[in-house]
Length: 279
Image (cartoon, rainbow, N blue to C red; front, side):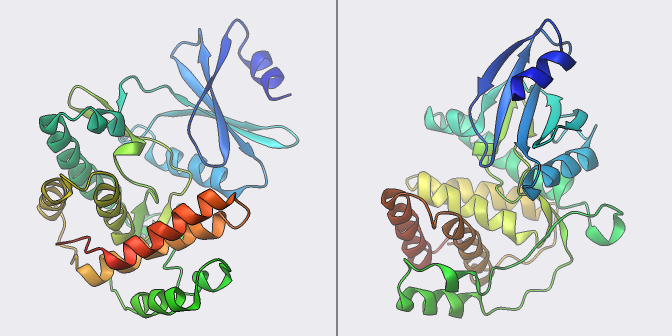
């Protein structure tokens, strides 16, 4: 059992299950010093290894949890990493403190531009997944109408020029832990090399979907912080395409989900098609 291997490696600790993560489970190892968590994933799932490699690349950077160990058994891989003390960024947003919300979105722009997208694929020896636009990914989603599929294909038919950088793949306040003025980015299982607009678009998509009343102000704060530190061109056309690409990726993962989940992501697809995420 999963618990057995952890208890053998870390005697005299208590395992407490944590929530979060798409394809894995996590346990807090209470009594460890330093305090660590074990993130466990199916050994045949590439996302776990991507997270391991991305965390190793970023080790000691301060932008992500420090990784201490990685090991496997017959079926699973185990990443041992720092437990980050603080409060989840989305939880802080939900409390309605606008000063804190402004601080979070400024930090998102700074972290992303200076400490994540500043790592260029061509200057790195690390072999991480290449994450591109899902140009034909919509075709296999049978619960999306042909009309919507056509609109998606038209919007994904773009050409963008920018060298691949490290990307998080699910970047936003929901995957950050904040403590005082510090922000640590967690859950790197979708990390890899890709166009930086993939992360930028998802930040804008997330705030417009979940916080429509304050999205314009927070988007502007995020974009200003990012643009001060990066020359990348950010256009509505490109933002829309990369946001749609991410939604398509999720739609592909919901093929076997219950009807409520499918309907919700179908709604989000239509919402993305009809929403201006930059203006």
